[in-house]
Every structure is written in C-alpha cells, then in structure tokens.
Length: 97
Image (cartoon, rainbow, N blue to C red; front, side, top):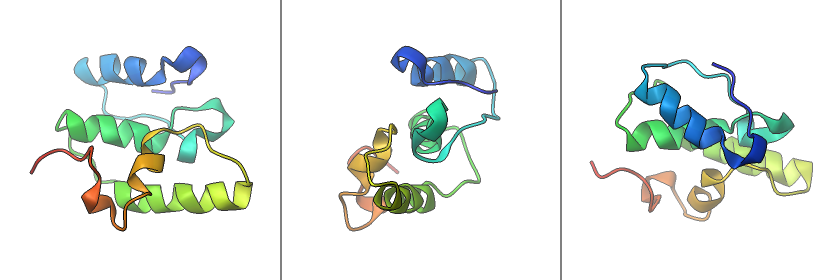
C-alpha cells in the first residue's frame, strides 16, 4: 500500500491499514519525497506487535546519515528520537520485550 504523508495523516492511515490486515507498505527512508517514513511505519508495527523482517535500527542509522548528507531535517519522526541514543535498543519508544 502506498501512503503519502499529506496533512500528517500518514501514520493514522497506516494504523488503519495494519488493523485491516495490510502488511506491505511502500515507504521512504526518512519520509523524503512526501512518502510515508519507513522508520515510522516500523515503529508503528513494533508497537502493534506486527512482525517485520526489516531492521529498524539499520534504517534509523541510514536516516541519520541521509539527514547529514541532505543538510536538513528529514520529515520522519521516530528516527530523530531513536538516533539520539547510543543504540536503538535504548529507544524509549521501543516495545517492552
């Protein structure tokens, strides 16, 4: 499913889709190009205990690197919180395991 981040409703639309059984999303690193941010979708999936083969820690690192190269803040939300920590496993929003 391809979701856009128009009007800040991308995560809400992803939540509705996940609760309806959708498990494949077209997302972009850091939310560039107006697409739904991959790290935000994975954060949501983790909170809902929806399994994913994607390594969110690697995406968070890549988004931070892209932001450095880009020279401006990316539209994504969760990577900024997670990237402030030495390791994403210390992410304060990570689900309890």
